[in-house]
Image (cartoon, rainbow, N blue to C red; front, side):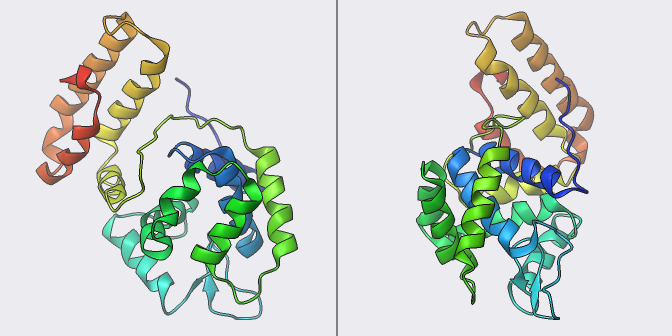
Amino acid sequence: MAEKKYRLGSVEGRIEYAMDFFTGRGFTQEAAAGIVGNLLAESGINPKSKQYGGGPGRGIAQWTVDQRWQTFLKFAKNRKLDPESLDAQLRFIIHEMPSQMGEDANSIKTMTDQNQAAKLFMDKYERPGTLNWDKRLAETDRAMRMGTGQSTVQNNRGPITRAEDSTVKLSAKGNIAQEAIDFFKSLLPQVPNPKDTNVEDAKKYFNSLLADKQDKIQEEDFSLLKDTPKLLM
């Protein structure tokens, strides 16, 4: 399966990446557009953004530099992620949503009205001093129009919890297990029969990766494998 390429140097490429990021984690396209629309209004979804005029906002969500931004920097450092990367900042949003939004972190995932999703994310996560609501609506519509509606890797992890950390932590160790899991899961919807050759190939690929690299993955991170399809066992 060819890896999807994104032009992250352009706003359009970052929109596409972010839309795929959220839909790949079980968000509806409308919910993803509501979130991405807010990020576009905040920063142009630029991970290197600094608030215009020397204000305290940093990154795609314009986290306050001496508060939530410092929490993000620790998050990235602990997981060996580049703090100026779009991926690291999107992962932090997923990590932070439960503490910032409470139960709405889960309810937003299934929303089918992009504008309602945008308002919920603005009210509960961004909490901006200046709403700029018209701009948020326009950017949400832009994200919705650009969204593909289907992520490159189908990876619905269900309710958003701190368990997301285990995925990020393991990915920082070389993506060994996650690469195999994603590859395996990408084949499952296409093959109804577990004995299909493609599934057998995926199982062999998975097992060979673990056999070759398991010494590089700390034992505590194997908790992620509990979510692996039963067919792997």
